[in-house]
Image 1: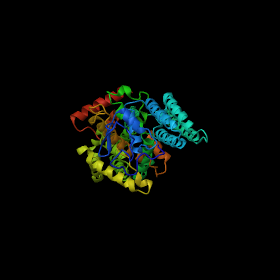
Image 2 (image 1 turned 90 degrees about the horizontal axis):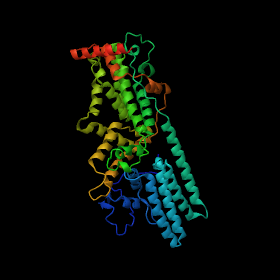
Image 3 (image 1 turned 90 degrees about the vertical axis):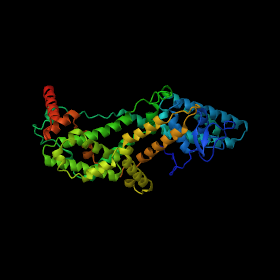
Image 4 (image 1 turned 180 degrees about the vertical axis):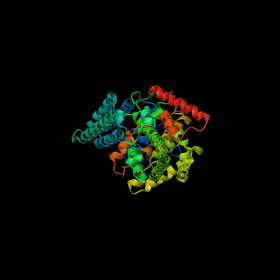
Length: 473
């Protein structure tokens, strides 16, 4: 995560900064409306990124441009262009023989590189980017060869960058062992004794504690999602500029792993319910997960809440009418109201906004937690990308579009930095992450064994499933 603040605590209406670079005769490029930068050529936007003696770009601009630039240009190419501008400005200052101005300029360039390497360290993963970085650093070091201060700062910056790249590389090498759905007939069919099989209630019977452990897992997972991961949603969908995008960052493991967690949690909930033999215990299991989902909502963990509700709405669970008739569904109705998809999930978005406002004024990490429904968050970015073009008819980059996308990504980055206030329970988390989950086929079999088919369609499905399973043995 960036050590330097990216956005101010309260985002203003303008992303242009208080001081704008002197573009000379190029006053119409970039274009501003009401003080806000709305578009510009790639060259003008790059020029605006590079500090001068009298100008340093607004941090919101640095973040937004560096985030969106990968759609149009490789990071090493962008570094090369930044380096060329730096060389030109350095040469102009050197002709004036003003050493102090030269040192001041060098300090600003170092600050830009520092923010870049801290916020987007993965931009420097390849040799070309590192080569360009070292080239700029070498030239800037020449501005202060007497006391070596610049050299020391650059050395520390490089060391921090290498540590960040190493840490991220280690995480990506740890491939999550995706749980394979159970299809073995002996595991599914309830004619087999189940006395030795644990369920979630035998590991944790307190809904609040389970919700806290789910939140711990969520925050751990989102901590490994980076802004450039999210930007791939835009860059990889853009067929027009795809050939210009970063071809070396096609891996979306972080996003896939998090999405897989949501799916596994949904299937785990359904498995826990469907494999219970007795209706009374099954009813208790349903009510338990309703309470867990409610606690997740209260915490601000909307992703786990949605996963649990999705699991209970799967057909094998939803068809258990005898079980649901015994469930006190008032609390579940409230949860479903919050996650009602009508009007583009208006109720959920209102709740999310409330949690975000609470987080901004909170004094404790417990109140700062905001974990959005990740699939909806991704869809929001996707639709922002689809309804707005990357370039305007005049060929300029539609910076207003990327500013809006960066605002949403920044919110996500802010939420993911919250330190989890709950202690890790290894036993509970081990169960949540490794307990067997049923395939959709197995869920239906378990569901039919719990409550027999009620109509001809279900009877035919049950007969086909059972025959298939027995033949597979």
